[in-house]
Amino acid sequence: MDGWVFARLAAVIIVAVAVAVTAVAIPLVRDENSSGPQSSPPTTTETSRPDPLRETLRRCRQLGEAATRDAACLAAWDENRRRFLSPSAGN
Image (cartoon, rainbow, N blue to C red):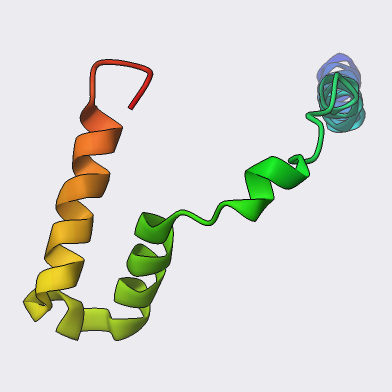
């Protein structure tokens, strides 16, 4: 009987150590992955040209359900869909 108690205790300790090692290893691995090359902030030429489609989509998002009846929002969604699904990288 004492052998079974010792075996169960050993199994519980092994599982607890495995969980603790995994809990410590996961954040360490994520920190190593996030310390890779960082993207540079946008240049002034990229920020100086606002995208009118983006502004229209933002306005449509603020309209909520009423945007489904707005012709400008419908056209903006069509254009956004066309840009997203376009096979060429230039568009």
